[in-house]
Length: 377
Image 1 (cartoon, rainbow, N blue to C red):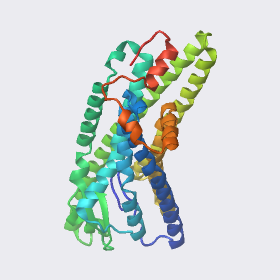
Image 2: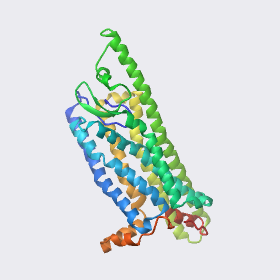
Image 3: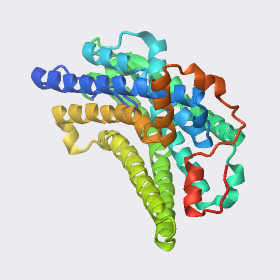
Image 4: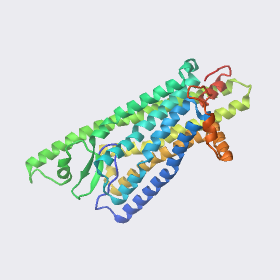
């Protein structure tokens, strides 16, 4: 793979088996196409529902709205990815390259950030109800703004180092490159100390510089966009599930309601953390395998298959998030059925309240199960 950095596009070497290459590429393009066909309408529908249906104006849905927006921006780059895969060369120019890399960065940083923030919101509502007065629309909007600002700062290196590089085979690649792109051809060409000692030393120095810069950014990205959100999501949902199951054991009144709610939250919580873990784990396993130059990466066909599969899973995560966070919501299903019956979403728009109105959201309903005397907004 001729790409460096954790956000990359798979590129084939000319020596690879054509039949295997075509099969891997076809399978990946189909997977990306399916993710785009499901994810773009799904996330658009989530944005529409939260904006126009009054029952969807809740605190938790502020974070879900931003998550859907991040997923939509990421999936919007799918056509470019498919075209680049088919052509095996970048033809869109430097400006589009930077925009595309930023789009990938949104998946790397923004989606995990809002998944973690949403998990924190539900954790605070269920396990720390004393602080529930902080769960207001204004605070949710402020937290979302700070999350986006943090994401923009984290993605600054992507804008600076996203470049279109032309290799010795004259194929262009949109990639993160940490050195001087003018020497890229020399870096890719074979050189020995006996042939040209000065060039050899320059190439070795450039390789050392790019390796350290790339590895630093890989570590920084891995920590901020995967490990920290992963730990947060598992911790928050583990506490939520434990709290609800403790309530289920200790309270015998309203037993069926508690049982039903606890089971639903348990399944949904496990689905969220497992989905997030599995959809991003292959990408990072592949990235670190390439960084450490593990033995299996010498198998070109295996390396390419893993690379494409890792990318496909990231797109799949953005496609299934609407189903995990919104489509399983009772309020969402009720509003969708209402719209289908009337055929006129403008009715919902005309009746929608302002964002400052207090509506009971999913987290608030969970609090009532944990403590029936609670009155959270």
